[in-house]
Image (cartoon, rainbow, N blue to C red; front, side, top):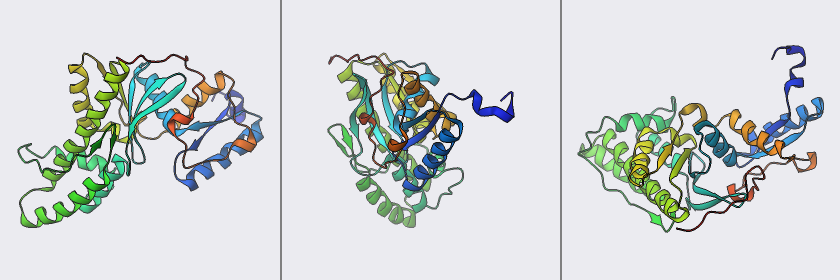
Length: 284
């Protein structure tokens, strides 16, 4: 800031993640936000983590009204906007896709540096594509399930790797292809249902180039466009919370101190997005 001694004078409000997320980080952040709000007499704005991802993506990609695929370590949802809410068309019924990938990475001994999912993506590139290990494909209507696939591939990995039948790269490739195909399928259904021709991928797993490529192929076949970002805005970041928070603040939405509690269960469709027009999609 130009005047570091009075940096807070350049701020319009204090935005923080109200949820969802892990309890301890949420509480720590909320305490800091309350303190700054009181100390500097600035309005407090609680933000839904998922909505933060979407609004950051819409701004960064200049995407006004896309079908959203939100994929991360804690969430897997297909979302479309209607009547001032982000409606969930499909989601995981057990674990998130990022959690599935991270746990499998540990099974085959991949490093956490920089992240397990990234290392799976890189190792999968070493596969020729000729060896595809057949894995369960679990799409239930508009929802997906990953826990059974993880259990199956964990057992198969130990057996196949011991016997020398496949490589770690083959397993990473097979897992990615199966999981991402499931996501492409339910995203395409949401596009068809809402009549939208643009898809926005957000969340940490959205950095995966193979997921972007598979989704891009589907979207182009439908005459649409894909909006995807790199790690700067896909992975959790403070800018996305500020972006969603300033939208709310511009329309007069603030969080009272007594309501500044956090929750680990705060669904995307629980937020009324007053900064967006109350338009509805029409079933095609």
